[in-house]
Amino acid sequence: QVQLVESGGGSVQAGGSLRLSCAVSGYTYIPNCMGWFRQASGKEREGVAVIYTGGGTTHYADSVKGRFTISQDKANHTVYLQMNSLKPEDTAKYFCAAYGGSCLLPFLPGYPGADDALDAWGQGTLVTVSS
Image (cartoon, rainbow, N blue to C red; front, top):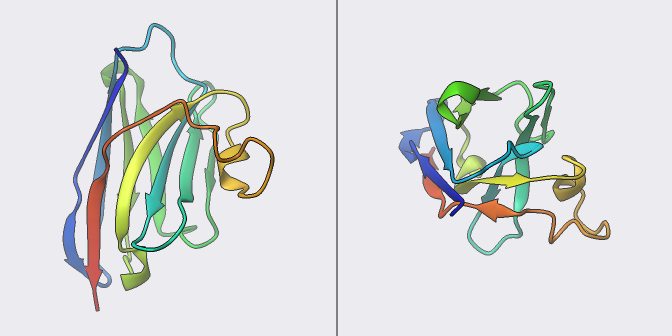
């Protein structure tokens, strides 16, 4: 049974940092893409960052470039999201997801298949940034 379990969320002041972790289990193969997504109250899901598990190439949403870093620890089946210089607009529930195919597809809302691209995801962890 595939499981993704996030941890590391919390409340911080603007300018602070948090490191999210996503422990992955139950896969008999390594998913092509591991991504972090977020959903703020009343808003649509937003892609934050993704890593191509094979080569390690990463992609970030423009809103987090230069502040967030996604990384993976293959040996421990864990994906991380280091979040620095946090802003109040980063407040959301963050969840990690595993999927195949095009790693960028979930970052393209409105594209055919974008909404259904994620194969598995966790329950999420809440990040609250106060000003």
